[in-house]
Picture 1 (cartoon, rainbow, N blue to C red):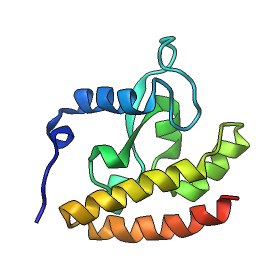
Picture 2: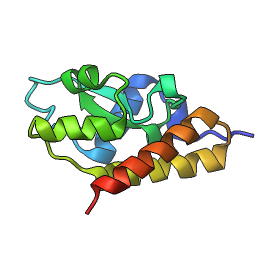
Picture 3: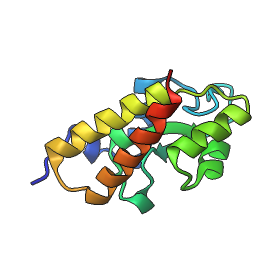
Length: 131
């Protein structure tokens, strides 16, 4: 049994606009602002679609194209380590919070069995990274 929200019915461009309104006009990973025109905002899935991640706002953040391409399907814990090595702000607590919101959305809507397993494994990894 799945229920949809208003945001689920938005096309990709409008969903990205809603994500930017929610999170602010900067890359979730490197924090470079999009407003200066040097970086293009893209929709980044926390749980990659390859791992069963849905195209729901709860699973999406705004990322610049270079960060989105560099991450690819890299696991969240490994990607945050790479972000730290590049000098980007590492925010495992914020990623954990996003995963919790996604888990709650999955509980409400149902399904997403593969994503649930991925979220559980990433939660374990990310908790080790938080103080």
